[in-house]
Each structure stands twice: as structure tokens, then as C-alpha cells.
Image 1 (cartoon, rainbow, N blue to C red):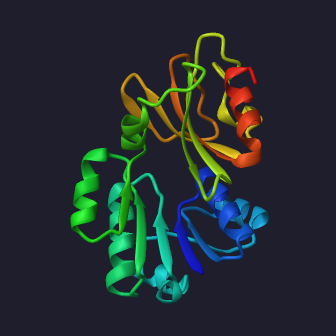
Image 2 (image 1 turned 45 degrees about the vertical axis):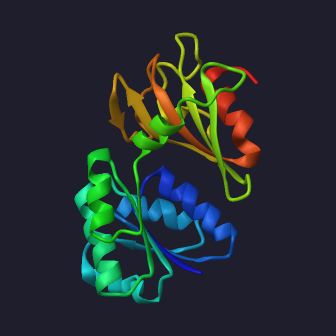
Length: 219
């Protein structure tokens, strides 16, 4: 399988690592040189630099040979345009787009994006599930349990409070989304976490417990 992924943050790295472990042929398009260099050092993938919604760059990424294209940037407009070009010009059969503003999801789907997903809606639709701890909710397993998506709420005494994400031991996991006082934040590695933050944690199956412990401080 050939996959093109557009974006340059930790979520792209995490997904790229999973795809590479499956033996997929992976091409990444990162928005700047620093992110591209970091991804190329850590992943077995072809890495390009530039605007993933640029048709010329998509051609250089051999989008015409791809089975799937994922657009995961912070700009909904860029994600939509990239998916449309991939489908209409290069015949990519399956496109997946991150929708940062959940109000745009329906528009994406009407305009032909195969799957448009909003982290906010994922949290909202699954929030009612119960687990043993009030501040940890197991939302769903992915890839036969190899990946878990978990909602974690930080309390005042959580060890992650007041620390930057880059300073936490989250190897094999990534904070994909932060809900803070009703607002959706796509965090950076330098972002600091606050008490009351509601996190969407994506983790490898064998790092599931360790990542949660780094955030909430218990097994």
C-alpha cells in the first residue's frame, strides 16, 4: 500500500511509524525544512518539503500511485484542497482529512473527501463511556488493539500540569488534541498543559499505561 501524509507534527510522526511498521510505502509532505529533516531522520519514508495542497508537490510525491492520502495540517482549507486535488487530478481512491473546526466536517464530506474527522466530535460522541477512573476514559482501540485512543483529564495534582509536552515521557504516544475551557487546541511540543485540560491521547498498545502514568501519575 502507498500512503501520502501531509503535515509535520508529532501526530504525523506517530502515524508514519505505524504505517512503516506495516511495510507500507510512505511519502510525507512537511510544511517546513526543520520538520522534514526531523521526520526523515526518524522514519523510513520519502519526505518532501512544502505546501501539500500544491498540485506540483503532490505530483512529486507520486500521489497518482497512492492508495490513500491523509491531510493533517492545522489549516482546514489546505486539507480540503489537498484531498480534492488528490482525488480529482491524481485519482487517489481514498482521502482522509483532519477537520480542526468541526463545523466544516459536513462540507468536507459533501465535497468528496472520503473521511473527514474532528477530534472535538470524537471526544464528544465517546465522552459518555465509563472506566474505573473518572479522569481516564478508554475511547477505542485501533488496528486490532495496537493503537489506543484515550481521553485523559488533568487534575490539579497531575504531574503533567505546568509542564511542556516535550518534557513528558510520551515515547510511543502523542497528545493529538487539547480541549481547554471549551476551545480546541492542536498542541505543539512546546505547549504547556493546565489543570482541567481534556486530552486526546493516541498511543501504541505497549505504551498505553506508561503514557497515562506520565500524564496523571498512577498506574
